[in-house]
Amino acid sequence: MKNAVIGNNKQKANLIVLGAVPRLLYLLQQETSSTELKTECAVVLGSLAMGTENNVKSLLDCHIIPALLQGLLSPDLKFIEACLRCLRTIFTSPVTPEELLYTDATVIPHLMALLSRSRYTQEYICQIFSHCCKGPDHQTILFNHGAVQNIAHLLTSLSYKVRMQALKCFSVLAFENPQVSMTLVNVLVDGELLPQIFVKMLQRDKPIEMQLTSAKCLTYMCRAGAIRTDDNCIVLKTLPCLVRMCSKERLLEERVEGAETLAYLIEPDVELQRIASITDHLIAMLADYFKYPSSVSAITDIKRLDHDLKHAHELRQAAFKLYASLGANDEDIRKKIIETENMMDRIVTGLSESSVKVRLAAVRCLHSLSRSVQQLRTSFQDHAVWKPLMKVLQNAPDEILVVASSMLCNLLLEFSPSKEPILESGAVELLCGLTQSENPALRVNGIWALMNMAFQAEQKIKADILRSLSTEQLFRLLSDSDLNVLMKTLGLLRNLLSTRPHIDKIMSTHGKQIMQAVTLILEGEHNIEVKEQTLCILANIADGTTAKELIMTNDDILQKIKYYMGHSHVKLQLAAMFCISNLIWNEEEGSQERQDKLRDMGIVDILHKLSQSPDSNLCDKAKTALQQYLA
Image (cartoon, rainbow, N blue to C red):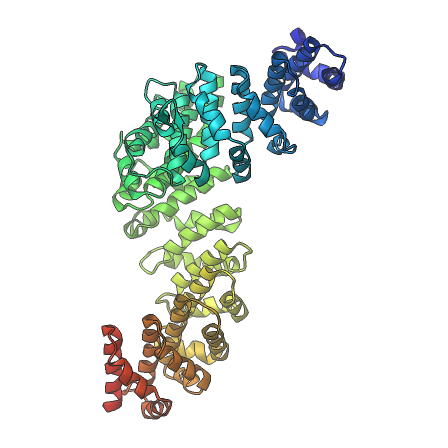
């Protein structure tokens, strides 16, 4: 059987159909089977697992994993290795659920104990771990069972395969895991610290796979806060190694992995972004990622075309991700990226690609570039980026929507020339729709974009926003559990209530509800920023001509303004002062009555007190207000 199935998928499938798997598993588990027979069974099963994904599914359906794990309790090393080799093949298949390794709590400690048996047990077990460690729960289980101590010394093994699998284990253990990363920094192997061993493994004379994986380990440790971003091992070793991986000399899959890892490394750090942008002409080098598949005439080899096509998506996605990281903070780098051959066209094309991953990466890249005032006014306008963006927003998955709506916020800033056409293409309804999303990030972006849209806008736009959003929804957002949503909604209200005719118009139709909302927030358990923003809204209302009366006839609100004038926090005192100043301003009709009413409430006494304030800003405002009484 063994000789019939080696390298022959058809024969493997035939044997499975004929029912060989249950029979082999039976023999494997029989007390009476000799060790040689059990080993041969494990080898044949391992060969069947090497076939198609359907073969692996058939093996899983016959409960092969518990049987093989049971086999690991045998004293015989050859049999253990055969079981491990088969388990390795099954666990590295995409159809196998990783959880199957963790169902029985005795398995992980037993595998740790088997690590010392032979170079084969080391290679297979490390490979199983690195494939089955997905997410923080798995990392914690492996970490708590001593993975770091047990695997560290394998980095100096004589076998390249063992060193490589151990390295892969460390990269998946450290990913986004501060606990593991902080531990790794201090681990000694033969008197050398782990980071130093990783640095040796990313030197140019080492195999590419090893260079890439050690660069990943150092990258993940750096992102988890265990290595500083200005440490030499990052700046002088890891970053240049990853830039090398992006060059034309490398295989397509290496270039993808290099660019994605580099994007992750430099994402939060402006200094690393600057260094990367001037290393080996990286920005121009990435432009090459868009040239696959190469022109058809040059490709006579159909296999090569297939390979290029398969990787073309991944290459574009990786390039967009890296451009997004490079341009995250620095204006000059953004300019360089945009000036790279046809870059804006490429990104705009990326927005309508069939692959969700490429679309997401293209939107991220554009979002990063849209942080530049200059680019919003020039390149973004020349390429009418808003058109494809509005299309992306129509029916995209949430992860794309979050980034695309975030970018829309930038395109709606008052100096952006795209603001007008976006409004005309039905953005108000779209954004009001986002504010009703279950996803808090989408609610924030929807309301944030409306806030930007309402800034210094004409009355018609403000009326559109209020009509589309509806007052019910506005008040729902004012009681949202997400602080960001609440702050942006207050920002929207503040922008809607600016310039006198608008304030009076809106307060004449929605005054009662807005005053209720303001009262609720000032009474609620909210932080200083929320209350300050709310008092600023009141100050805007107090600036209206007819709207003022809604405050003057509301004793509850007046008492609250008085209370905040005496608050311990200067920001709130200042905001309350603005309200008072707007109410008592002399040149306006009815100012005398308002001044009298506020004097009777004891406001003048507070103003005298505040004019002695050590805070110069507050002291000036109080003096100015007192002058209104004297005038």
